[in-house]
Each structure stands twice: as C-alpha cells, then as structure tokens.
Length: 312
Image (cartoon, rainbow, N blue to C red):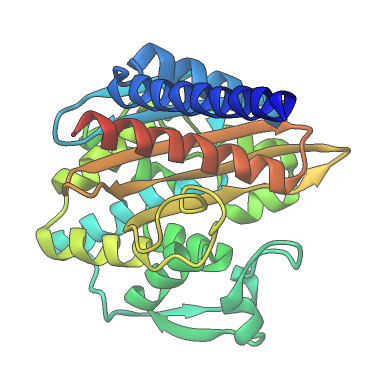
C-alpha cells in the first residue's frame, strides 16, 4: 500500500509538471514577437531548397509598399505569365479606341500553336473560327490559351507593341520577345521572355493602381485573372478557402529531368482588405511537379501568415 501511494504521488507530480510546461510554452508562443522580414526571407530560402533549381520571390503589400524578396532581381523565363502584360497592352489599345472588345478577329489553322501546347480554342475549333477580342482575352488569361495569345500578339503587331506598353508604365524589368508558337518550336526561346520577380511585382502594382488602364479595363482584367482555372495548387494552394486571388500562371515542359518554368504571379486580398502582390518563379528545377507547386504554395502561405500577423 505505501508503495502504491508513492507511485500515485509521483504520477500526479509528473502530470502537473507536464501541464505547467505546456502552459509555459503556450504563453511564450502567444507573447512572441512576429517574425521579422529577414526571418521570412530565410524561410523562403529554406522552402526553395525543395525545388532543386532556382527560385525567385517578390512579395509586396501594395498599400504600404512593404516588400520581401529572394533573388528578386534575377532573370526568370515567364512562360505564360507573359500573357498578363500582353493583356494589359491589348486593353490599353481598347481604351485608346484602336481596338474594340467586340471587334471580331479571324483565327485560322495557321494561328494554331503546336499539339504539345495548351489551346482550348484550337481543340474546340479545329478548322478555325471568328472570335471577339473579349473572347480571345478571356481565353488567353483565364484559360492560358496559347493560340489566343498569338492571335492577340498579331492584332497588336507583335511583341514590340507590348514592350512599348511596358516602358510606358515604367516597367523595365520584363521583356516580351517571342510568340507562343516560337516557344513551342524552340525550348530556348522561352528564356527570351523574361522578368525579374521584382519587375513582376511592379507590374502587379501597375495593374492594381490602374496605371495605363481605364477603370473598366482594370476591372475586366482582374475578373479574368480571378477566374483563372490554372494553377490551383500554386499561390492558391494553401491559402484559406474563399481567398480572392487574381493570378496568372506559367509552365514549361519537363525535358531530360529539368523544368524551365513553374510560375505564378498575382494579387491576393488579405483579410483586412489590403492587397498582397506575389510573384514566385521556379526555374531549371529537377523536382517533380507536385514539389514545384508546393514550393510556390508554401511561400505564398508563409507570406500570408506573416502579413496577417503583422496587421494584428
């Protein structure tokens, strides 16, 4: 009996010790200062290691200009992220009266990108079709249609017109040099359409501010970006359900175990109504698709958590 009493006393003491330790740890956690911007950048670097390639990140609160970057000034192939500045250039011409949203454009089989490239337009209209500028924009932005992109580039008289738009809004850290069809023929061509993560965040700021676009055009483009069906496991992947994300993805093929581009760039609405520009580029990666996309999702969630905590 004495031994039983002693063992019970020890058990109760140990339980109280564990409970006290748990409460202490919880209190310390609750009172801890939020991570610094430098800590978040380090977190990005740790997450990026899983990609087994080069990762570039630019995060910015658009209302306050608070920003955090990782390899933010290095060049990355945009792939289909470049459809965002192309769409902005098209809408600029709509605003100026050079183009009209309901203007019909003939799409022929000569406009089709290759079978290995994504094009719902080509698949739905194998003999060609007539579509409005608005339809082509929606296909290019929301569906990342390569054929629609090249047709709109043709309507704009080529990539040089998009370059002119970018320079007009003060953006010098992005280059539009080739078409989708050219990228389909030559894997190296995609590297000529490059941007820095910092430059892409700047372009997202220009869109948010309506720089070079009317309010109507800005609203339409944000609608198409928010309705995007691509990349559900990238920026959006780990964010709370229902979070508003207006984004454009970019993806290349995997050749000899390397993937040149797995990208996402967009504007995320925080719970307090502020807007977070996120640009994450994963380049020349040896990791599989799920891992590459998880890198983007984890970086986006880390940024979300940091800025939500900082607003409390």
